[in-house]
Image (cartoon, rainbow, N blue to C red; front, side, top):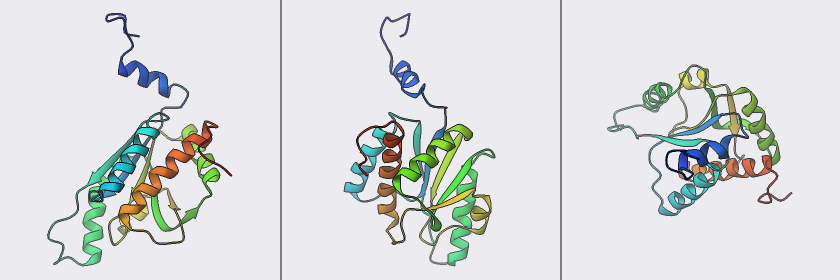
Length: 179
């Protein structure tokens, strides 16, 4: 409550909302804008739900221009440079990668809960169309796979935010998830 105004401000509500959690911030970094209107609406819905549980943001790195003259490796290197500029040395970087560890939803929730005790900024990364540069793989702390199946980069964004929301609801013991 703000003593000067006499009512609860949005900042007061945000402080109250996050006080049960260590102040781990979660960020999703991705390459290129989400273009499908249905995905945009659904992602926005899940982002607003996630924000009830923990500080969450999405950083969109613009797609590279004039890539026709670049090899796949050169494109990955340039994207990698842009990605690495967004990171702080203490960040925990988790690549969403087809070769990463797979979790069931409850296991992922347990994993997130453990990270809350040890991590200040948890960064998830969805790479560009050709994957990640060698430098990004070297910087990564972990790799997670959302499925053995292949999804479009646009779809992975929605699947990830839904799974993060599901993990938050599992941690809080809320009825969203059913086993």
